Image (cartoon, rainbow, N blue to C red; front, top):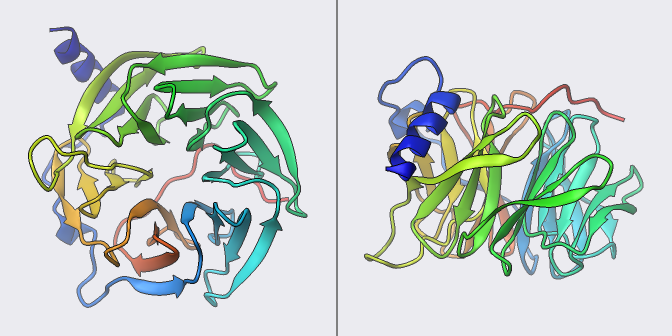
Length: 296
């Protein structure tokens, strides 16, 4: 009963005013498929979109953060040797923030690619940055979700998920979603006015290869229509605004798919990290930004 009540509260909080079928055909474009943008990396992860629509991503093992110019597709090195960064996201201040799992810290990159430590001594697999500067990150080994405030204060705001991994906010920022890589579910929480979380429940159910096998759900993004996309072992799974699964977009390669973001000037192009490569494909969907994003 408690889970049912929590689910109703969360969906009432986060879904748009409309409710209708949202098939994959509303998102995909006929004749368009995944295009290889960059390869040769050990472990690509953490795609993030800057104010101009360009994409930054990390090669965790080589301690690299790289930039893809959306218009030309050219790849350049933004940061090197500043720690293995698994998650990246631009904040409303236009700064690039990163979660460094091995170093157990949240950092902010300056324009030269050097890091400033925002918070340390916490698990930091993936992160999302809210409009008010609050950062939420997943601590996979400790089964926790952390809140890091703009002044660096930190607290645990959720626990009990087997392997919390990807994390994202709904466009209105009233709901936070956390992927459990070890199971089939994505957990949704209501974000309270003070930044804490409540009413956590397994609202989304991913498709899996076989019953009771892990989805390996990882990075997520959302679009302006209220759809949620999550990188999984099967591919990029899409859920509608009522948390019903709409279908699975095939992976660009057999390698492990780690994350996805909507980028480009109109936020209408998927960029996905898969193994040591990053791919993109145009869509009919458009992404969202949190708060007022300003470039340096």
